[in-house]
Length: 316
Image (cartoon, rainbow, N blue to C red):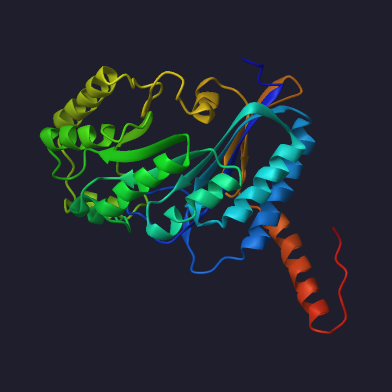
């Protein structure tokens, strides 16, 4: 494995969703309309700024997270990938992951996402039954979830999907059955998270009032132990806390985190870790308003020019 100072991974945060899940404390926001070109240009601006810090390196992985990055147009994703792989030298086995929701609109983009460079998809399923999906605030049905997994398998060589366990009212037997159904799809990677109540989420006040009751602690622990046992027997042991994979199918981007290697966090709220001048720095990007402002000025300039009024020059 190359040293951190000569390699790099990139996390790109797309902070927009169609709805806010009640358990989510990520930097995500519901917007009905987005100036996607402005955001595309702003993210590329930040990639260039990051390159000025790191200099030439070998690019190991790109991970589009969110929010819901599958709401991005596939061509936007492709332009950002092209910018990153032009700035840094891509490794021969460059892993490019994008998180997606399983609703029909986003699934219909899988093929085009593949054509634009994404070679690994991570689908946010969370549950395989409709009552629990509704409880978790998900906008898809169990049927849509299963169709999305099947479409992902037929489109990408490497796929993963997420499930949340220790849900209100869930029994050990129900989780065992659901996990068996998940394994039946034959994927080589699963992300299995225990539901936790985070401050500031919609679930937090419900939990505090006793209106939302999680499985008691011993049952939750039994669910964790059962998960480790079942996944181990199926040749998919945990390679970190919540991620399980067959040998060789681990998410390389996740391994970068766990091996304390370098990655750049690009986008609002994105964290990073960079080796610079023989020191290791933790980074957090709060805003990308500078890049957005430049993009917006250029957009206004183009609109004024096309309307027959005087074109305004803007500084780059």
